[in-house]
Length: 182
Image (cartoon, rainbow, N blue to C red; front, side, top):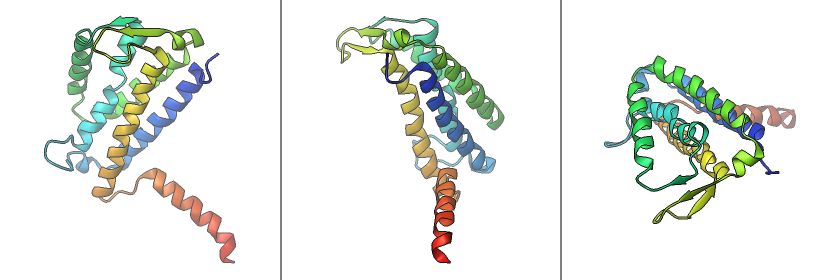
């Protein structure tokens, strides 16, 4: 048995996605075009990218259940995910995709057995390591989202919005400090 089941994996992914969705709602629509530097994604583009993050691993690991890949084999998966991402052009479409795609991916994770998550995927050289568990590869989607949400939280600060996790932590600190102030 793995130390992290499909149910636990789904729960943790739902928490990550819930926080991303809250971040998206907290940033005013008129700020979604903000770009922190030339050549970077805007807030809206970053959120569209996050909404599409699960497209590739879902297709590769859940639908097609590939067990052997070469570097060239990844091309169509990457192209399909990028094409989907480009369809997400409005705030409403991005928010809907964050919700729907996140929940679909969580349900997919929830339905994975220990054997599914332990299954090995093998790669041809020069990809290293030569194999990884499906768990490790699926976990990459969550890690990828957290990476981009960190960027979003910095962009929030740049447009004058305090991230909700910071607001919640500060509120807890105030409550904890209140009895000491008496």
